[in-house]
Amino acid sequence: MFQLVIHGRGGQGAKTLALMIAETAIQAQSFAQAFPDFGPERTGAPIRSFVRIDQEKIITHEPVTRPDVVIVLDQSLIKNPEVLESLSSSKNPALIINSPDSSGEILKILSQFFDFKGRIHVVDALAAVAEFSGKIHPTVPIIGKLIKITEIISLDDFKKTYESKFLEKLGEESIKQTLKTLEDSYYGL
Amino acid sequence: MLAQTGAQAAAEAMRQIDPDVVPVYPITPQTPIVESFSKIVADGLVNSEMIHVESEHSAMSAAVGAQAAGARAVTASSSAGLALMFEVLGVASGMRLPILMNIANRALSSPINIHCDHSDSMGVRDSGWIQIYSENAQEVYDHNFLALKLAEKVSLPAMVMQDGFITSHSLENLEILTDEQVKQFIGRYKPQYPLLNIEKPVTMGAIQLPDYFFETKRQQIQAMSQAREQYDAVAQELSKLTGRSYPKIETHNLENAQAIIVVLNSTAGTALAAMRKLKNEFREKVGLIKIRLFLPFPQEEFREIIKKAVGENLKTIAVLDRAVSLGSDAPIAKEIKNALFDLSNKPQVYSYIFGLGGREIFEKDIKKVYLDLISKKTDHQVKYIGLRQ
Image (cartoon, rainbow over the protein chains, first blue to last red):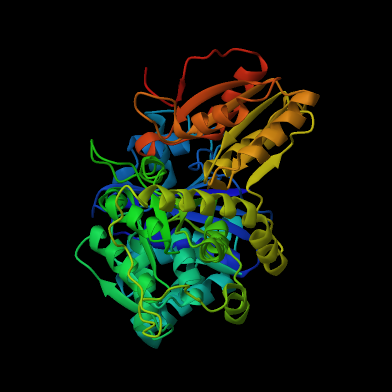
């Protein structure tokens, strides 16, 4: 079973991202769960969302404690106790972090707390979407990277989910740019 | 296959039921149920009259009025909302109105808390409502039809529970029936004495003094027994459509079990996952019981299941309650002790309390209960899972 924890701040799209990943998996005939950190919504406060994907029916309802991948949408959360807890689970999860810094610099910060053994994938999401002046959501390059390193869902399937969810809201032009950004991130361009 | 939350699954079932009247008042974590259903109404997908009332007391009162008039009424609530309905819950069951209600379980104040436990639905367990508990979104969806049909058969209201947030806000796989299948399964609602039938005028909810009140209550007691008797037939009919089964009491691995856990709602899934991960030597010795139909409580079936298991190996039962009955045993533990009282060869029954106010429950907690039972590291003191001591 694939398990993912997304750390972000309220309003950054951690919940929507989790829902879209699970929905894509379910459309592709897998079993999946997505659930947010429960509670009152507070913009800017640290929040988590969780995803499970499996080829068999998922019966557990415990929070994800041993993730395969940890996504951090906001670098300022790197020292957050919940982020450190996710990263220090015995599974040595891969870390995808939105940051302008190098993976070496991220590792240096983590080393102050524990010996992180997983792989670090840095995505400078804000830079990647900067030229589109707010029309592309910064989570887009992050999801491209997640799909690339895990192939847990297919890029094409995710594109379909994204399009069906946001075409009406964003319009064709923005969707086209978004999907291109997603591909660029996936192919590492 | 759809991807829906437990709340959306309830709303989807309500869409297919297409109730005549849906009086609602939103409350966390039930809100996404009525939110999703509002959209369905706004999109013109149902003929339902949605009434936005000013409180839950009014929501249930409007449901009572509508159902008495001869309409099918469905509503939803949680926690303080259900508590505010308390007076009218008894009116609904006493007037024998088969209203359907979805509950997203949430703790009761005080302290104020929006997270899951079962104090709300357990707190209204003497109100004369049928209670069916659901492990996941799929069961929420299926149980809506099961509860509605059973309720209408015996003229009693029914509530379908799902864990607040844990189920209501989690996206999962959902298989749905066609609208036509649902229509055929639930059929048209044929009220026995609709107020709007001017050919046969009746008075409903009238005062009954000591000369008749007792007899009316006796009829309600009998209706609950009928619900217990008729449940299996309705469940089997639904099972034919869905391919899934809905036993009142679901058992796993009881054949050789020395120790079993009894639990309901989403934790039943977590417990089963935990059980399957135990090392072989332990796994062979433990089992799990999930209670689906809590009210009317299937005492005889429970007794028979346990009698058979005791005849083989069963020594201990741990009952996991997500609610307390302050000053007494926890609700499910009490039912189970009651059900087993007449057995000559009884297993030990231990009571565990967990998850109050949304305290998380992990597979490791369940494993520990099993290991304690097997290694006899337990006693008759009530145990608290995940509590800071």
